[in-house]
Length: 100
Length: 199
Image (spheres, helix red, strand yellow):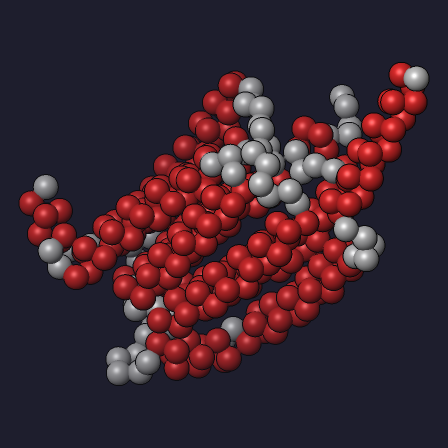
């Protein structure tokens, strides 16, 4: 049967995919997509633990993660639009103004 | 292998393997694609499939919230934001330094091992808010959310309000001008200047 470890492995795989995305992306919009992938992976782990330990706390945390993701997207996209107006691109290498 | 085949022919096992296979492929496309439209579409469909995981796990309300908030609201917000950016253009990205990726990848692998080793030390976990038999998931969630988690819930509501105001203020400046027109005008002026220089 499908156990807790199956779900945790899938969640870890998805989290790693998101992490790879965060490490390799240079475009800010694509970086946001990669963070969404990571947040979703964590939500799967929360729901699975909540189911297999018969405890509602995991689902509560998943709700709060979704709420935080929503507000992150609202603020983040506003900042992206301001940056795009200012620099004309969303590339992190173009946005680096502090040259060391 | 026999376990795998046996679990594949139950409803839960088949759904689990199908959903996990598809989500991993879709999120891989999200992370690796150079086209914003492809990345966004695969992210949205991956999120729909993740709500399928929640339904298998009996978290009905969470699945519905995932569909409404993530697929409905967040992806719609992304697609609105994409109208401001030039979405048809291929994104060119430089590959990062290999040593940095190696160190960061090693650290995150260590973190993953720690995360998997942690449950070994937590055999004595007991349910704080156990689920009730015969009560729907939405009712159960509602009771816990509005008694034990009332303060975090209100704080989350306040945080969403602040985020909404911040989003409006950040994005709302100079909304009467089109971004692409500003870019075209700038490019046009540059061309005119260079033409003058040539003359």
